[in-house]
Image (cartoon, rainbow, N blue to C red; front, side, top):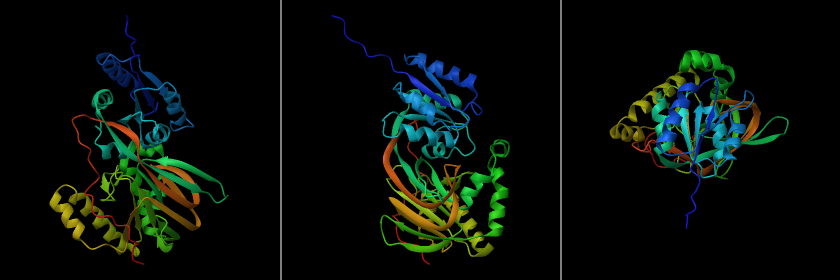
Length: 344
């Protein structure tokens, strides 16, 4: 009697047509699908008015064994929103400016062949997904996933004012001008916030970032405690008192970047006193209201002006395929939880 055979697995590729060397990618995928005995890969191009959600939904409909995501952080965010909770892994082909999620999980950068090899033969890691519920000034509400961080203030202004062409031509240096303008103006805004349903507090801040990962564009370590699979969100509020406050923030961020290179450096950093101008919080839910509408960004994409945000985390909701020979690096050390409120 003949035994029933399961159909061969197949991969799907969601790709940004303007960022991907399609011919090279198709050749690499074809090589590995043949070597592993997989069925023919299905290809799904992102549309100009869609970061990749429709392409991801099309891929999911055919139940692939893995979805390769070729593009930047915005494409990854859109695909992750669809693929979370499905159990189907995504594999990253990082081709954007920041590639922050790829850096955090240790995916190969500038090595297309290694990324494709990992997609077909790597290991799987369950990571957290952030969910942002956003209220605009007209009373409308929408909920969107993110993988790296949500930002209000400087981070959102950078996303809004920096063009795709500038990022493509200049890379991280495209952000220098908006950063300089924002630092010189040093406009702080008022917000009421709370963590995990605790009591509501008030403060003034220049920038608020809720991170699932801890590293910014330019490989700058912003949130040392952020780990992508710890089931927690890490919040940082920048509250500089003039240019001297910005100098202290810059010095601390530089030290954090240097400290993560060694266990001794991380221990020394944990023992340094907190900065009033750089306040950290940690929890599973962050809520904030603003007196005036403010720009918000998710993974580098602008989502317009909001008056209220409610951000939560879905632990282990997305499966990411990583190179088999690499570990699961974190953004830095995992210091004890800092869920206390910053000093006012």
